[in-house]
Length: 531
Image 1: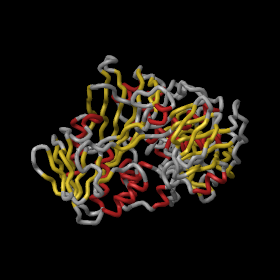
Image 2: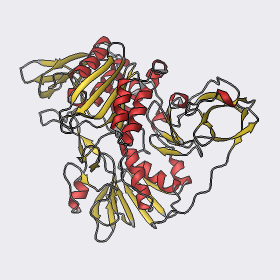
Image 3: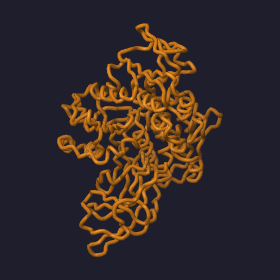
């Protein structure tokens, strides 16, 4: 994903006064024709590229934690000493520059070479990854990044390379992003780093006793380490017409391309369900000039995830852009010309989009005898109960330490981070998977950042102003005595990063302090349309 960056700020190659650097506050400038941030940490001076390798987020507006910097848009994390991409959704490392001191002057020198990788403690000869979504593709890349030298086979049942799935319901569907932005990597990328990528094939059998998988093409592959990253599949409601040709779900690039082909301006679309996917599709189809109506059983869009007040706020944003809502209504059948409701009304529709949730794809694991309960059950290292078999992504149910229970989370960044964690564990570098869940959602020019995971029926309070698009929504667990378990921010990107870091440390006192003293918004307006 290429983005042009206008150079601004001081020329670090010429040097700046060292006293102008405030500890842990990135300074934006440039050196040798490239945008660079210069950071004083507690242990030294660091200079790295200024733009996140995922959507070119402005790292100068990010958060420094120790020797890392985190992107304010989608919470990617980088090592300031090496530039390494430490956690998703970052794709590549940042350029890292030499920092030179001359008296009270600091100057940025030449780019530094990447440090040599040490061999990992373990090196399984044959790694097979089932599923080429966020978790599977991230695992394959992380294996190579950590020094794995054995064979890696990445198997996808879609006829394309791994794609940036969140983009499908946003810019790509709206016609604002080219196909090249959607593909995470070109096909030859996998060849260059020694990953055998198998597209448009599916694993139909797993034999854990023989450590092998069988593909639909009849190929049989043996493994020394296996990752199940089969993801989830959209659900279709059990009503007549749900499988009709003009009825769509959105999960894959092919799904998005079919919707685009049908999205002729002026046509009428009914979105069934007020989920994130449903509403993002509604926004994208409005951008294409379609007439959009959302029908949902909920009292307010996204109420079960965000609460009624935030749901009404999101509803108002969509209504201001011409989307109509029919809430508290149940679909009875889908006809060729519309959606029939239980109360007898019919909503006219040329096409119908189902935003009615997803179901984890656990059939392969179940047939293999792995324990399943609304997802494949894994331990804190994402291991199943079968030897050398891990699971990650939307299909995995794992222990969430902050909640004291197991959860299955359908977030893109979580899936990628789990894939990276499983890869590290395969190589003997693993640790407890304890990343704070994070996702983002965009509705026209309003972006939401959600960190943590709200359990049950939390108490919800709002600080700031939803109307002014400057707010923090706080979710407290009733089961844990009012402990903050999740936070949504609007227009407060830096605060979101700070709360995420405090949740990682399990520092409840710091979380409460951050909520009492919101971080001033920094550049959130200018990034809203890009994130």
